[in-house]
Image 1: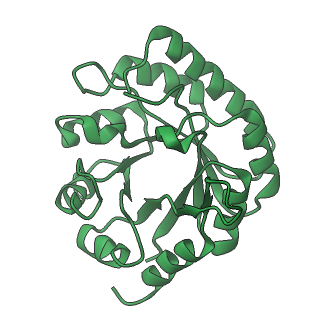
Image 2: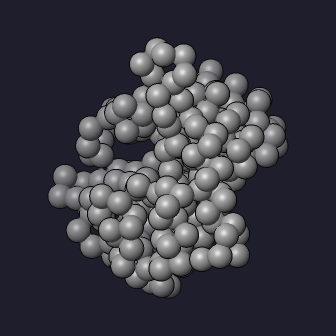
Length: 236
């Protein structure tokens, strides 16, 4: 069974490298130093114009920090979603949204999520790793399924997906229609074992290394992506 590989990126070059290396999908963010925020429309437009095969998941997050959003922040998120939908109109690229809102006591903010999902309309929604901060992962998964969320990015409530492997396996077997996208410390040396032990069919990683330009920035690494894909192609 094919295991889908998603690469977290924050620039156009990252999208091109991910596609050339054979990734199935990218998660397009701005400001990965803050854990990923909403990318500019200019960046999104150039990515959609430049890739031909990979799907593009677009982060919708107005700032770094926690995942409790004010009314004004939610209004910005809604405006961003509508702008992303306009940018995606007419493209052959598979576009989706990545977002998530929590209450102050670390539950899914169902009211906020309903508003955002309504604005998403035809674009599928992935709930990002804010999921790992909720107290009851199974109950949260049920709520997200009822809200219409398509997938959840999670490391099973732990720092890495390997550490959260038991929870990932339980979530995958939960019976929910929500897909489990395993992320957190995914690399070539552990990805096959992760897939074999949990049964997940999608993995997520940030495949960045120091930029060869010597600018102190990071760049998406072709070899890291290829090594993960190669490890998945071998016997588990």
